[in-house]
Amino acid sequence: MKDTAAVIDESAESGSTDFIRSIVAEDVATNKYGGRVHTRFPPEPNGYLHIGHAKSICLNFGVAADFGGLCNLRFDDTNPTKEEAEYVESMVEDIRWLGFDWGDRLFYASDYFEQLYQYAVQLIKAGKAYVCDLSGDEIREYRGTLTEPGRDSPYRTRSVEENLDLFQRMRAGEFEDGARVLRAKIDMASLNVIMRDPVMYRILRATHHRRGDEWCIYPMYDFAHCLSDSLEGITHSICTLEFENNRPLYDWFLDELEVYHPQQIEFARLNLSYTVMSKRKLLELVEGGYVSGWDDPRMPTLSGLRRRGYTPEAIRELCNITGVAKSNSVVDISMLEYCVRKDLNLRAPRVMGVLRPFRVVLDNYPEGQVEEVEMVNNPEDPGMGTRKVPFSRVLYIEREDFREDPPPKYFRLAPGREVRLRYAYFITCVDVVKDESTGEVVELHCTYDPATRGGSSPDGRKVRGTLHWVSVAHSLPAEVRLYDRLLLSPAPGAGREGSDFKADLNPDSLETLTSCRVEPSLAGAAAGSRYQFERQGYFCVDSVDSAEGALVFNRTVPLRDTWAKIEKAQRQARAKR
Image (cartoon, rainbow, N blue to C red; front, top):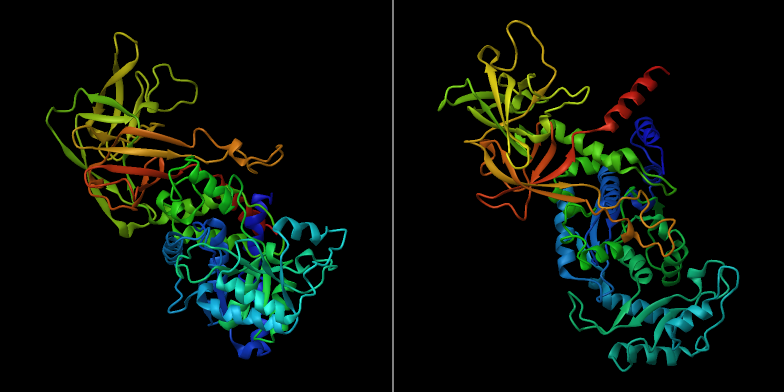
């Protein structure tokens, strides 16, 4: 895994140029493609987009924007057994939320099915494709290994006329699923196994989310992808590294058909520790009930991150500082959390929220009196102003902010100890009330110092503890969901026989608190609104379960932030060079 301090250091020194932008800049300078830059983001609609896709989205749309070009959104919908309109709709929403727009350039590979079929016919007529009757297992057996060449299919020598007839009958639905496929005739002895007569079309009776039952044969991804790029006039087809071995096939189809030829360039995908990026694995989590759905706030999907309170700006920042590389690596998930904290620190209003309420009575505060305490909404942004929060005789503080027998270096409330209530007064604990049956402390009695209004003492005395609070009579009930990492291992499933990543699931990834209290300014807080609960972390109003009169908050990230210290250390080290 890449060293976390090194990642920030490298990103700070690298600037905005990367090897892909360097290639594009040279192409523009030499007038390749007539000086045009036209990219595309081509997701397969077989799941929800996740944080790994964000890197590709930012890169494709970003390169186009940097060079005054265009970027298409194209759904490579060539496998109807796994694709759904729901996935298309979620992807459109996620990409727009991330901050990108494709204008009127929304396309589908299924838009080109007829043209792709005609291209396949063209290859058959040129003797470059044939219908093969081998089963899937037999095709794999004939393909050979990395050290042994493959063997020709017994159907490789069929005549052009026979292949055309069979392919037309495949389209007409005369054969059962899996009975025949169309394969490219390339080289069964190629050192690149992908080039050993790959399958171009298979028979597949499944209802397509856009084309219905119009087709019973579907093109394979490698055949449809390069030709869709060609038909759309893409200049730079930017792919992740797993497609590097497929580039010769990308080029072969375009060259043999003598059509417009984009350039495929590969880069390293974004991999995060403590995370799985495989759609298949994410689908396992959804279908197995390990999470509540694709938008569960513990999921690395963009919809899950959005529901949890992550901002598009933070995700774009992560993609920026991790850079564009030619080799795979794993980025520590703490970097993502750092980006979120850094962004929310500037934009999130501060509020008081008590997660585990503990009752405090101020014995010398007048009964029935209520005063308004002025609080700063965000110390990082004076323009956000202030708000008034009611203060009264009976308050809630956090249960963990009191210890009857405090350990060393515990500076919060204890018998006889004085602390500060944030923006309000100094208080001193004078008595405790215990449950007679259990001996547990259930209520504190304190006194307050009226001279310390605003949280400071006119005589200059200092207190080391500052607590957040809410008024019992004025606070609102809320449910708070404390999310932790879904997986306990930085490399889920690695180093274990069978490599079942689910064995690394964190049983404590969600804790739901139902007795929380928040300040009254949060009444009617809009779904998706983000706040910093003083001393607790950053929280977001849940977009699914919150309703009028029922506040549900998701914790985005806690306040603890080791990345800020790392970044500061890196800046100081660079300044000394």
